[in-house]
Length: 318
Image (cartoon, rainbow, N blue to C red; front, side, top):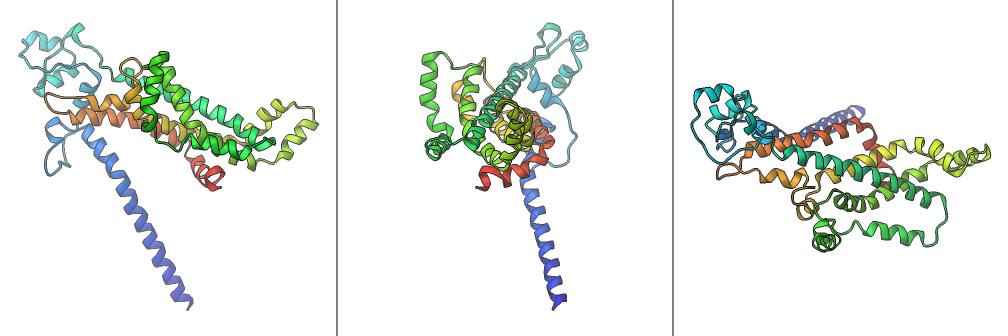
């Protein structure tokens, strides 16, 4: 009987491992597809069947970071020799005009990427900071109508962004906040604040009140006890909340598309606009997407140890 039970457990474990491996491959397939397309020659990006083995090249990244023109022309040998190596790579591939000297200009992608970084980082810091203070107040003090207030905060997350995008655009245009960094930051903070409050409240409830009471007896003020006792204990929750808020702000598309145009436009609505000579330049789009994935992947990897606790404890558990 014991042998049968042990064999069943082994079989179940193997099946579970196989299922996890299959799910992992399914989730990683789009990442591999984007990464491989980012290094493919342009003519191999749309081949049927897909080209798996190829000679990687960096021309998609060159086209991504430099301004191109929708034309071709011959260049004399002296101009070819004077051009930087990346322009030679573009020209050797038979694409567009060769640029020399001052004609070489950066594209708008670095600016759009920096806009995403500024908006995502600032909105995450504000959402997590305000959410932590708000959650502390709900956790430690008796507030009239607490359940109703918490539900009201949660209700701001019930509608998808695209539903309120048009009304927000009209209001922003009236007050002059459209196409501005501060406008996007306010939107992302408002959108992430409810999630931050609910998740952090769960972590605050787990911290024993006796720690603060002991600190208050020792002469600490309430604010000193919060910063020296509560915050270190809530560091795991803060990190997990920051990861989720950063990912949401980093990947947001609807508000960024409608609320911005040039100055404050972020990378998500800019990347699909990379058009080639009559057709979408899929290798350039893939290169921009691949670079756009790196910051959030690195940030998530650095805080990976806090993510499981952030999912299994706090508001989601409740």
